[in-house]
Image (spheres, rainbow, N blue to C red):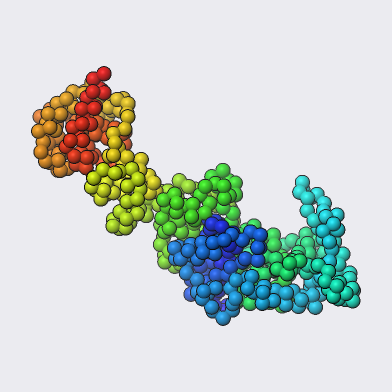
Length: 483
């Protein structure tokens, strides 16, 4: 086979959906695994769905995720333009549609809206229009007269009504359909723009695309694509249809679910590297049970033959776990830079923010988790004294009150509020008391945090908030427990 060439051909209609990102990723991995070329083509022929700024989102997403294209609107590889509206303006699609008309593989259709409406029928509870090839019977003279008169038209594919069409997909195998099911789809619309299906075939051939990667919702259109390739006498590319992505309820992942786009996930505090890693596993499995991959490692390991047919569930819990693993492995300086905005959202006091960041680095899955973990540093929350009861530590409200009353004068006399000095002081108290560590550490940690779970132990918290605040919080606890 010639050099592998894949393309990512998004429509600029808004944020980058997870499904689109996976298509781009798989296309990138397939070609880079073989040392081939990855192309970017902007499919903007559907003017009604065009969203201002969406092209910038496409560029930004590919750059951030590391899916760097070899050719595209900004990198001419000699087969441009790489924007479909520019290709349409150059007359490429009409030229090739007319070639099919000359071959009898397509025809002009002049049917008006009223006639097309009359062809609608109900199939499986849905109203659809199946064209009846009415205009195929027009003579060449009639067609030329209509065109000369400026009568609106579309160009339709001339599909056979008998027999079958078979095509091969690398994931789903050989698929055969009855030709009776293939309607004469429109190739050129009445506004002169090509349909998505027709433009794809023409562009993929002219750009030398060897492997077409797309979602399995396009499986049903593939026979029509194949008939176009055959009508032109072109080589059919390798088809790789990706399985459906569903949410946890096994419904198609929709834009309404709140985490369906790359930008949604970034805003929720996920790391790009973790998103790419997770998306790679939505339909593909490595030979072993490994789950954490860098992009470079994915390029090396990816084999599309290990993709599955069954729908892939977007497991949000697993994504959070994976993101947490990336955060744990992150360089601290980079982590601190990313964590600081979240820390500053809840802490305004002059505390050692780096030490607070160190406390939470291995305890979070996404960055917004930081806020709930550390908000008690800023202000002691209201809490229930039942938190002082811990069976394992053998503490209750009464024993905790006793411990805190005994510790208060010791804390007041303590000058050095560093973590080590405070820990040494508490261990001395524990030794003299003849109790287990937790018997003293549980009440003091609860008193200075007001929380069931904290990112650090009592002495680390006391070091951050300092002597004055520590004594204040212990006094609050004594007052609460004395009621």
